[in-house]
Image 1 (cartoon, helix red, strand yellow):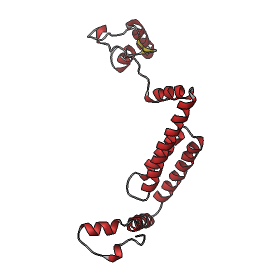
Image 2 (image 1 turned 180 degrees about the vertical axis):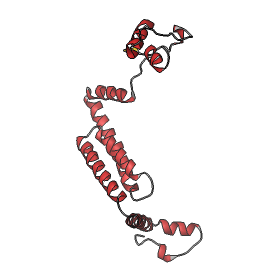
Image 3 (image 1 turned 90 degrees about the horizontal axis):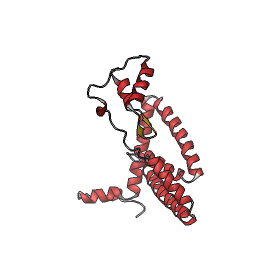
Image 4 (image 1 turned 135 degrees about the vertical axis):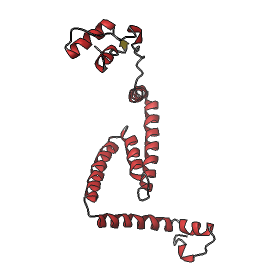
Length: 187
């Protein structure tokens, strides 16, 4: 037997250890229904040994989290750290939403970080994902003129924000323009 089924059968692992060649041949025969199996020309040594299974990142995180839960101080510190980090990412994402770039992605990432420890954040993330998906489907189904108006509205929000923050006046000053109407009313 040759081909991907034979190779896959020879690489089959059982709880992190390689199976014997006989078990691999048996698995290969049962997979194809064939009673004869063709061996790899390089012999049994050519089969790849099973690597020690390393836990996934998610499993390592869960293990560390469980250890922290056993200690009250570590649990409070963990939740505080997650709360601060997740809130910072969430606020950064919200600030970036009207601007070109990954604002929504960053905001959702912040909620996902918070959602690892706080159930209300997990529910908010699910709710906002559904709402964002509905909005995206709605605007994609509109006439191109409507989509252009939505884009122009977003551009107006960005331009207004940049003007209020004084960035237009600052940019004009860098290139030597003195245009008083670019000055922010906020000072």
